[in-house]
Length: 85
Length: 523
Image 1 (cartoon, rainbow over the protein chains, first blue to last red):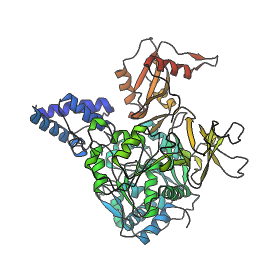
Image 2: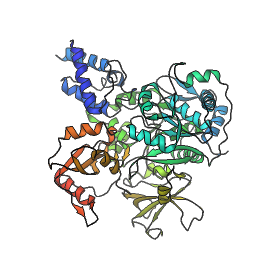
Image 3: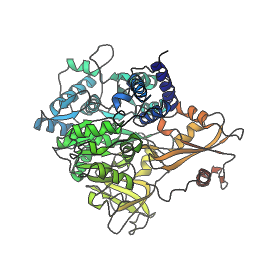
């Protein structure tokens, strides 16, 4: 299993716990469009990701394009991890 | 001109056919295109059998297609019933059944969920690729030549908006075409919304406040820019990029826009185009006002207040914000706010009474609910033949006629921009096998207005782990209704001999155990 798959699994677990959503969650789903995330819990997701993966995300990172899909959020986390390691 | 949104759109589309009316991430539409799409949609709906006065649910992502679906239903002489996509099943079913809905327009992301609760109601997707696989408006519109069969008068029903009530299921507020049209005129008048404005719309079209932005746009021929507020950086860059001039918000949005943890530096964005910011749905804190002024130095700030039963009641003129920061302001144009004592007489200045509203925005009552309608929509001897809204809310007016909120009618909990009924929360908490009794109430939370809290007693007298109880509730309730705070009681104090819980004492004891001061005033 790659790091990215692990990261996505951890994010999925968090989203399920936070939202109670039980349907399928794919890495490339737009979770805002799908209504799984809303404007409140997407912020919680960002804050969770910062803490859980010990990466520092700045204001420019915290935009829709980076957070709405698990694949793009995992990629951002990996990128920052590599830079900040 | 007879007051209705379809007539307003027809007129604006004739005057400004090529002006951009609405912009979203995916596309934009001119007034001409908006009219054409609304008319063809109405014809599609007629062809599948929609009759005048039929209720049509709209359960869609915020999009131009959602606006077209809403307008299409109005043009088809139907009645729009918004369905909040994240409502859980039982509430969706209640809205469908209570309104007697004949069809639901939804989108592919929500189709699965809606299908489960729709029963025999017809389902149509209102967006997406042009396809024959499923009744789909973009596909059907290709075969239709628009006909203008709109025949509603101002008094006819235009929409039913379901809002949480104090007893059980949501109540449907019945809105006339005239209410929508006059709501557009009134707001445009006191806010000064004009043809050159560009409204940045972060609000949902499932509620009257968001819908009113569509109506103002259509009435004034301005431009509406749709935006889903998830993250502040995206919002501020949209406001700068689109040169937004008008920004309607709610307090709950402001706490997100200016959330310190998200490290947003608003000075990096050119926000000089923003002329006004207006807010309703809760009191503006001093921090919120300071944040708005910091980010939008040239904008006028409107603090507003309203009952869903009458859409909007008061606004505080921007130049009075510093002098009267805790007031909800004065009556909006074409409406009057009365503060009445128990005998129906008007209260003296600074004396607390019930807020009663009369005027153009007063709706027709609760759909399919004559008992509650008779309670809240009543006549007053001073205004024979006229129906006024009795809010039950406690307010007072000062010597200048500024209104101050004191307490809500029924202890509704205001959280994250929603009104949550304690009864609805309690009903679900009580479904947990270990829970015996439950009393829900509000706990002040500066970020989201109020937290939903619930005190409960259990069968074995032991507390249920918070995580376990919350997990159970998350499968039953929309997220905003799941209590953030749970307080376990060995037993509940009882009020007198009526066998009723003493809610007041339960609340006081909970506050004491949580170590927080109970609120003196609610807003």
